Every structure is written in structure tokens, then in C-alpha cells.
Image 1 (cartoon, helix red, strand yellow):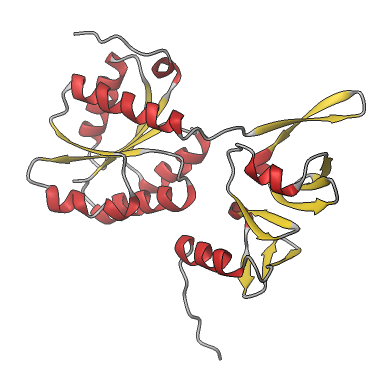
Image 2: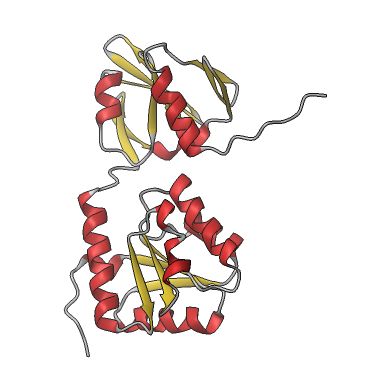
Length: 249
């Protein structure tokens, strides 16, 4: 049976992680019948790599995979590094306890095998609609320089710094100046996670290499943490990083 597809599903990409290659291929074939592009892998490290390289719109994780810890690690990885990527957990009937272990990572939905095409399609459509409602925004910015417009990849933005009526955008490849206040810039709908750490600074959380109570390090740049922002910054860092104590020699 064919289902009427909303246009966006034609262009979406799905990634499948399932330790059982037969189960992975079966889901891949079901998605193919629904005219949805997909890629699958049984390797957890490859799955993480695909998340960055393939840039899927939706992820399926097999909850009853042979090594449950590998599947949990991928869910945790998405929750920490790719929060805008919705994922669906798939398990067998009677595996409710195992599937509940994923709750801390906020999966979009749970599905039980065998997967019916109708329920599969409906869940995917809801995931896409939900993701559109929380639209990730722009990843590229066109900035006028002289008489031409330069396209800048916002994913390469390290941090932004207030400079009067302007904002300095510090990228991996250099600095650009934009006529917009820092406060307005951080409110723009852009597909990177900007963390306001000071009245004059906002940082791309992906590039934080180290931090202490009053300072964040991004590469060779030392960014101050303002007193007003300190509690929010510390709470964010505690929630999104794994803290380990290293004994002093």
C-alpha cells in the first residue's frame, strides 16, 4: 500500500543504527518503499561519524541491539552534541524496561517490532513536523563585504564579541564585522548553540576546549565569564559535559 507523502519527506535523510545487519537492512528497505533515503550501519563509531558526515534528519536506534551500551552511547552522543536531531528507539515486544533506559536522552518516540509501514510513516511524519516547528535555523550567513556578499559557514564560528553597534564574528578562518548588536545576534535563528558568557561575549559551545570558574578557552582564545552569567554558564557546562577528577601528582 502506498501513502501520500508530504513533500519534505522526499528530501529527508534517515540514519539507522542496529547491531543486527538483517534488521538494519529490513528497515532500510521499508524506508525505501516509502521513498525515503536512508543509510544504515552496525558499527557504533561509524554511526557517530555518519551523524556528522551524512547529516541525517532523523535517527533510528535499535534498543535490543547486541551490545546495549553501544546503542546507549549513541543516544547520549546525540543528546549532548546533536540535540536538534530527533531519534526513534526501536525494540521488541516485552522490552519495555530496556527501552525505558533511553528516557534520559529524550527520544522522540518508541516503536516495537515488527514495524508496520503505516505506523512507521506516521511516526516519521510527526518527527519531521516537530523538528520543523523547532526549526534549526540557518547554518550559513551572507555578509556584505564591499560590493559583494560573502557566504560564511556559521558552524565554523568560534565566538562573537560585542563592539559598539557591531558584533565581531570570530571564525576558524578569520574575523568578520557585522552591523548588529550582540544581543540581537544571539537571538537570531541559527543552527549553532551560542552560549552567552559575558555582556560582550557569546561562544559556540562546540569549540569549548577547557574552562574554569571565570574563563572559557576556545583554541588560543581566553573568554571571560561575566559575574551575571556565571551561574547559567556553570549549569550549562555541568549538564553538557562529563566531569572527571584527575589526581594531582
